[in-house]
Image (cartoon, rainbow, N blue to C red; front, side, top):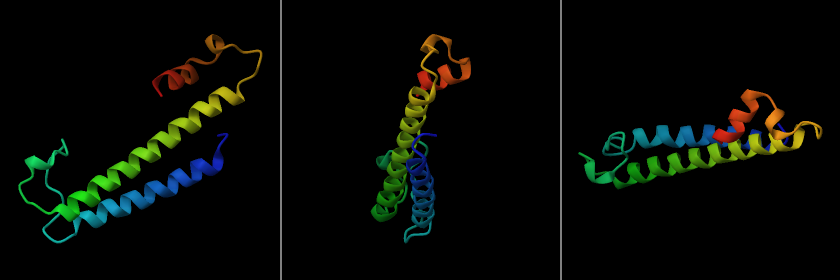
Length: 100
């Protein structure tokens, strides 16, 4: 990985987001209860603090994922040999580049 410090920072942000997610489950009024859609109006119990914390943790995880994708794209673009064109790199690397 080219941006190793960003990758390390991204890893620790993920741990922090998971900790926030766990905290939101044990808040007053039970944890967030709005199903897989995360649509607050489908909630059976109304606890705005736990829902806000849960959504905040999901956003932090999204930032983590974007940082990892940027790191992988920069690694593919900077560490390939100049003589290898983009259509001649390995299939796994090319697929990873296109999916991101």
